[in-house]
Every structure is written in structure tokens, then in C-alpha cells.
Image (cartoon, rainbow, N blue to C red; front, side, top):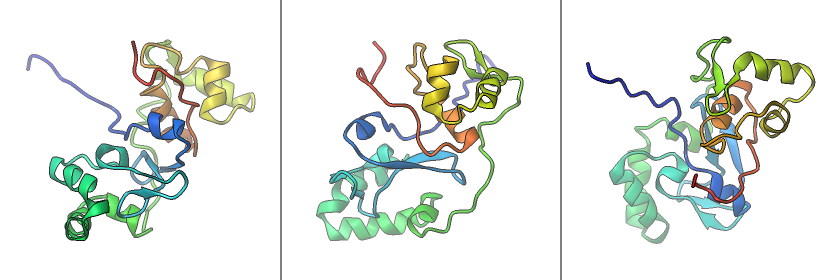
Length: 175
């Protein structure tokens, strides 16, 4: 083996949706944050539609269908049937089963690689009473590095079951 590539987070990109005022929530059974949306992708909190990866769909066919489903009842039905075979079906049927975060490797590991923040550093800040990701960022330095919190805040939020992450600010992608 020449290389092993491991991506700890397969997470919908919430930055643009959060900046547009769309609500999202942490779902521990999937270890992910999802925008609050209906089967057709409509998000009542902001009046927009979430499609594809933004709503946690990683399959290319289903992703394309999700862009057409709000405007085509036949494609919406096809998408709904395909989604029944995925973990997202639990989201739509409100049959979520709680479990621990899949991202917690060990208490000796890193929480933020970019800024060299260890999980024990996060635990120390939490002992001071700072118990959400935004406050952990401000007090503990988490999420201030090159990735702008696009990875570590999701992982840390998942581990502590935080309902909200950081306040995403422009630029939405690292420069």
C-alpha cells in the first residue's frame, strides 16, 4: 500500500445555509448535522430548498434527483423510494436511534489539527463552563486554522452533541 486516505467527516456543507438563516440540527445516530428540511428538500425556516450533499445525499443519482424533486412529482416519488434504502430514511420518518459519535477516537487525540488543539484541551475549556462549539472556538482556539473550522467543529460538535456549531463567516471556503 502506497497511501491510506482517511476522511473523518462526511458532512453536508452547512456554511452557506447557516449564513442564509437556515436552521440545522445535530443527529447523533448518523453523527452528522443536517439542515431542517422536508422530504422534497424544502426548509421552512428560511424558504430555501436543500439539495444533494447539502441534505446528506452522497449518491450521484439521488443527488441529481433531489435537485429536480421539488418541481417534478414523479421524480420526488422516485427519490423518496431510493431514500428508503439509506440512513437518511430514519431522518424523514423520525425513527432516529441515538448512538455515540462515530468520530471520537480517544481522549488523547486532536480536536483541531490546524491549531494543534488536543481533545484534553477541549475538555479543560468545557470544565470552565464553556459547553458549545462557538464558545470552545472563542476560548480554546478550536477552528481558527486553515480549514476555518470546516472539519474540527463538526467533529467536536458531534462528540459533545452540540446542537449548533460555529457562526460561519465569509469566505466560506479557505483562500
